[in-house]
Length: 433
Image (cartoon, rainbow, N blue to C red; front, side):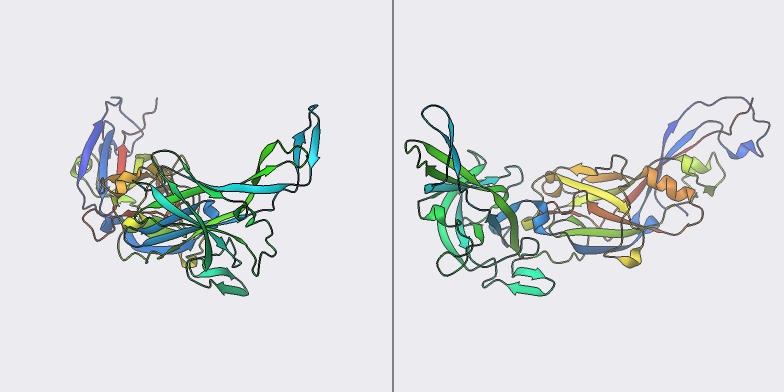
C-alpha cells in the first residue's frame, strides 16, 4: 500500500557495528534500528462503515431511568414490581426469647427510590410521581408502547408510556442532599401491593416512577418498599419490614433514530458501529524509512511495535449524551454477512476491559482524539498470509447494554475522520558469531 499520510521519524538507537557475512544484501537494511510513526487517513485503510442497533434490553441493565422533556425530547419512566408481603416477624418477649408473630398489621410505609448521583443529570430538586400499575407487563420486553412483546403475545399498553396508572403520591429528590427520594405511604396506601391477585376490580402488578419536573434525567439504581407494623404479641414493639423487589426496568421515548453519519456506540438497546479495515502489508514511505531501506518494504508482524485506531469524540444528541464513564471496546467480526447477528471475537485491547472515557469528551471537550490500541490483533493479521483481505471490526460498548446514553465519534466524511496510527521499527540485519 502506498502511504499518502505524513510520517514522523520518532526514535533511532545505536546498533552493533559487526558485519554480517551471511546476509544476502545487508545494504537493504539500516545499520541502526529506525522507528517511524505513520498515520494513515481513512481512505487508506477504512471502508464500509455501518450501524446496527437492538442489542439487549432495558431490563438487562438492572437499573431504571426517569426523565421529563430532557434535552427537549426525552421522557423516561421506571417500572417496578414488588414481591409478596411478609406474613410473619420475629420479636422478643420480656425475657428476651424469640417469638414468631403471624398476625401483622401494617399502618404505614415508604417507597424509597435510590439514584446514581454521577449517572444522573439534575441541577435542582426534582418532583417525582409514584403511581400504581394495573396492566400486566413483561420486564424483559416492555417498551414505551408495548407492555408485553414476546412470541405469541404482543400486548400494547392501554396508554403509551406504561399507562394507564393511578397516581399515588409524590416526593422530591434534591441531588445536593442525598441519593434517595422517599414516598411516604399511609395505612391504606401501604397495602397497595399486598395482594397482587386482586385489589378492587383490577390486579395491581407494579409501580411506575416518573418525573414531574422537566429538564432532568435520573438514573434509578433501586426501589425499595418498607412497611411499618406493630407486633400483636408486643404492641409496644414497632417493626420496619422490607418487601423484596422482583423486577426493575424502564421505558422511554423517543427511540434514537439510526445515525446518518459518524460512529455510534452504546445506548439501550445498544448500538454497534462496524467497519472494514485493510491492514497495510507493505510500506512505500515515508521518506525517512525509504532513506534507509528499500521501498516498497514488506511489513512483518515483528516490525509493528504499536498500532491503534484513532477516533475523535463528538457531542451527539443532548437527550442521550453520556453523563458517566463510557466503556469503549473493539472486537473482530468473524463473518460480516451474518450481521447483525454475526459472532464477535474477544477484545482487541490487551486489557480486555476496553477504553474508559470521561463523559466530558462528548460534550464540552468534544473533538478529543481517542486511541484504541490494537497492536496484538494487527500483528496477528499481518502474520496470516493466507488471508490478505480486509478484516471487519466492530466498535461496541464493553458492557452491552449499559446505559440509556450512547457515545458518538466523527465519521469518514469529517475532517476529524478515524485514522490508523502505526509505529514501525526496522532493525539491522541479524548478527551471527
